[in-house]
Image (cartoon, rainbow, N blue to C red; front, side, top):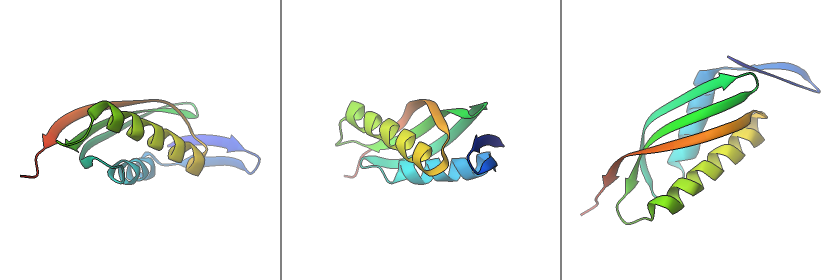
Length: 98
């Protein structure tokens, strides 16, 4: 459970909800063909995220990684108000569509 405080009061957000939200955000990114793992570590009102992803073989890995990091950080902060301290991506597989 992650607790944040704002002008409305104290809000508790479950890690399960955050994992589902991060999964949805990541899988919607171009070039990501699957998600193997989502680990969320909370420290106060900030989180650290570790993702294990599979990507398509015809994409630029650094560009896809930066896009995922940016989108996950932005959407999670915008939707929940939680500060994202870091997003670490581990590429587990490169999928070929031949």
